[in-house]
Length: 24
Image 1 (cartoon, rainbow, N blue to C red):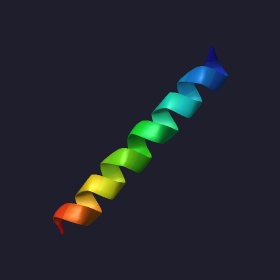
Image 2 (image 1 turned 180 degrees about the horizontal axis):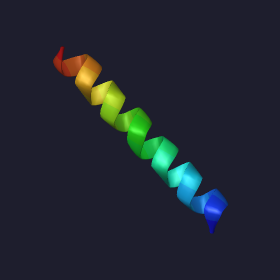
Image 3 (image 1 turned 45 degrees about the horizontal axis):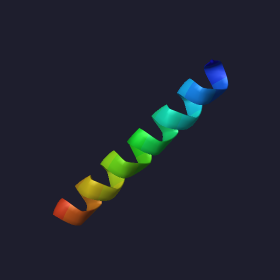
C-alpha cells in the first residue's frame, strides 16, 4: 500500500510541478 501511495503521490506532485512550470 505504501509503495503504491508513494508512487501515485510522486506522479501527482511531478504533474503539478510540471503544470506550474508551464504556467509560469
